[in-house]
Length: 112
Length: 114
Image (cartoon, rainbow over all chains, first blue to last red; front, side, top):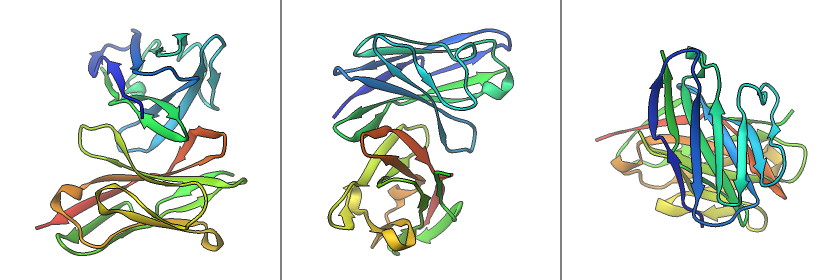
């Protein structure tokens, strides 16, 4: 199994600013994933982050808006840049461990 | 196109009654199927998963799900619902070697009446 922590757990930000979300895993993993859950919606994959390479973004998500860092095998960050109210969502980090997907508790972001 | 459909957005059942949550998927390769539960303010918890083998899989908290390839379905069941089961339930599909990239359904909100 994998235990994942995220910081911050929630934040309220003003439009036009940026927020960096941290994800820490208690074991080394090859790939980490970032999902977005908009209010009342399901989860959508933003990108896959491999250590030592550029993140791979899903359709509709771009690096300029959601830059990702993956400095080592247990840590990743997702930045939400130039925020607008439409970015208000829960952002979740996840990892794949032996075929099971584990999710962090999420970061609840509200943009005003 | 790859997708997951949960036809029921909201379901209400009485405590002690049986439960079935529907999930249909469209996936081009052999699907790996998952059910997750999300309680208010909580993260996602894996209830059960199907990769291969026996099409009836048992999960935590008394849940089970049956994979029916002919119907492209993976319905979640529980024989007797408890008030603590009230939550959001998500069905998801991924592929072998690619289980990190999951496609989620829209979710079903379960309300339990006393």
